[in-house]
Amino acid sequence: MRAASLRTRLTWLIIAVQIGVLIPLGVLSYQRELREMGHLLDGRLAQAGRTVGSLLEHLPSSTMPGSPDVALSAENLRSAVMVRVHKRNYEPDVGFQAYTANGKLLAATSNFADLTVPTIEDRGFRDLRVHDQAWRTFTLQNQAGLVIRIGERYDNRREITQALIMEHSLPLLIGLPLLALLASLAVRRGLRPLVLLTEQLAARTPGSRQPVAIDHMPREITPLVVTLNQQLERLEDTIEREHRFASDVAHELRTPLTATMIHVENAQIANGLVRGPGEIESTLQSAQQSLVRLARRIEQILALARLEAGAASQQRVHLNLITLATEVIEELAPVIAEKDIAFSLNHDADALWLHGHEAALTAMFRNLIENALRYTGQDGRVEVSIHVVGNETVISICDDGPGIPAERRDVVFERFHRATESESFGYGLGLSIVQRAIELHDARIELLASPFGHGLQVRIHMDAASA
Figure (cartoon, rainbow, N blue to C red):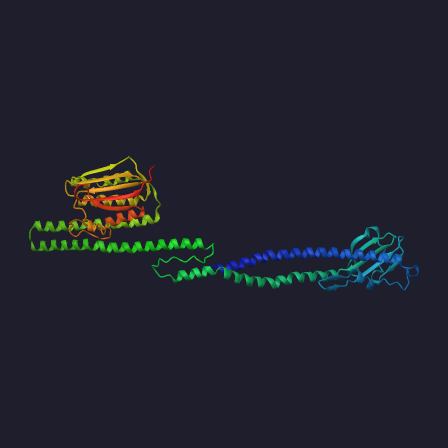
């Protein structure tokens, strides 16, 4: 099922809020006005009753009961109890009775002529039915002892009620659709930055590192765009690492595989020509060396891939450089023993701490020490030292091998660079891994002449974080 759009959802939520607020307010306002209107009509009815009593008190005795000159009629009373609501006049159908204190009828309208004398219980406001019509009556006894009962039919009140209903419902019936339309336009306008953001993302080309512009974005969307830019940057870095890894694999595996195939073919040819077991053994030994190189290349490529992936996903931790270096040296102890190399590890204290990526620092130590061992001859010398100098931790790895010419030290960190005159594996990916570890820790690396007279010294400067 397709989800509703954010604009539609916001529009309906706004309409629902408007309905939930306006309709209860309209109902409460209607009930309040209806209650006040009832009080007003009751007050007018009571006022009309007192007016009738006052008029009867001051009438001459000749115009008292039965006289045709009595001017008090239902028509005369309408003006007294007439209600004006929003420029409309509501003239109710009214009636009255007037009695002396001993129950003698003084005056009455025709519609109230058949009613009995009001009792004490009838005093005040009462609801009566007269000739199958509902009436609202008010009965009082004035200071002259006259008992006055005056009433109006409920038809008038029903008309006022209907008018109030129309006055309260029409604004809602007209206003709610208009508010819904305006809310839809406002939501469309308010969501315009999201439309612009969608257009920017749709217009991005693959591999683009141009961040999404946040100049005119609302404050609520700015953190989203900033996070999106960070995610896009990480994604582009990941894609670039994948492409670089694929290139590394294709480049590095081509030469060892080709060499292995050539040596195997030579062994087959030599075996076919029966040139002797020595030549066959030499060819197979060369093939074995090519396979060793191939394994080494695969290991370095995987190490570089793990380093890139780990740097993107792992946080820095508190690490002891002495412990890391010792573990790498113990791992390479068989190589050191096989070449009978004089190997030493020098450090100021048992622990030198810093915050870093463990996998990156381990790969850095392993590749630097392996390179030193690889280029150092039999009975050679390799020295690893870790010291704190001022605010820096200085890592130094020295060997007495052939070293690197000064004019070529700036390019050896490029991937797949090799010393052409070397018979070993070359620098290849090893120093690229070291360079990446250096970048991750904001450190710097120097390639210097070895203090042993010949060879290479690799010196790394890192910010010290002693604990």
